[in-house]
Image (cartoon, rainbow, N blue to C red; front, side):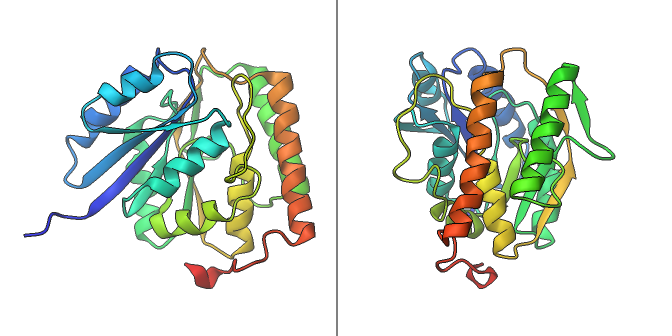
Length: 257
């Protein structure tokens, strides 16, 4: 008798996460042990200089992907393309959104949505421990995103996102900024890969939904306010430029899904 197919793949990009990763993996694996479906957990090590890769490799039931240090966007893409589950859930290494929020996204996927994103905005969402200035910066950044590239998305940057595997294969293979030729970077590189992903989904006419989630601000965040703000602004401008050049037009349509 054939085993049930994999229902869920959880992709976790990780750069120098030796301190936080054990707790995250413990919470995720404990949760999955209570679920009736088969699943897999993929940790994509983004060229860490600490013991992140060794921790993930030694953890029972976790698959490790080692990659050069090319930033979060590249790591997420590599994990999503390697995932084998029916659905793919992207989650940050600090598990800022608890894993038990997954059923909220699953309901929308089962209803036929092709990209479901956790949102820290709107009725039912909560933001715990976030400094006021970080919230203001996030709102300003989302305003810029809406002005330049995306409309109708309240929170593009929450790391808790899910999609069917086929959708992931289509969208991530068409990404340009953090594709196969993404350059090696220095230090932590938080990116706006989310903007390109959502832009491609909107361009293809995919059904996108936002689901309010609980989110906790991590004191050990790797976000560097000036450097990452400039990098993220560059990313959203590059998305618009790529679109004007026609870089996203080839074979991208809602019929792909």
